[in-house]
Length: 124
Image 1 (tube, helix red, strand yellow):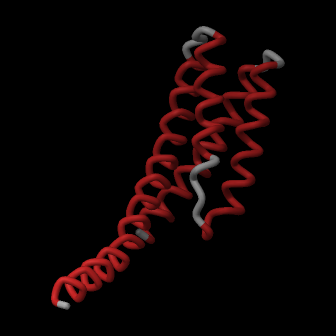
Image 2 (cartoon, one colour; image 1 turned 180 degrees about the vertical axis):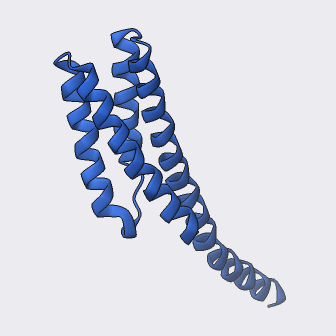
């Protein structure tokens, strides 16, 4: 009987701690995606300014676009959607060879992502 009670208590404690652990992991992933997005956009801007290899710039842009998908926070979702459109626009401009326009669009997008990251950090 005592072992049954111990098992039930252990299961109850385990079930209580799992959502807390999952939430903390989720927050860490969102923060990492947000910070990674900002870093990759800054990298792409730096590469554009240096007129670096086209493939390196395209890779940085693609990684930024992929990371931003994981940056999901309800209070900034509309901003994320607009900033995502700016990233797509910058990629298109870069592919068309308009590096100056791509750089300007990336800088505007970067400011939005920095603002979103600040909002996220302030809330967490």
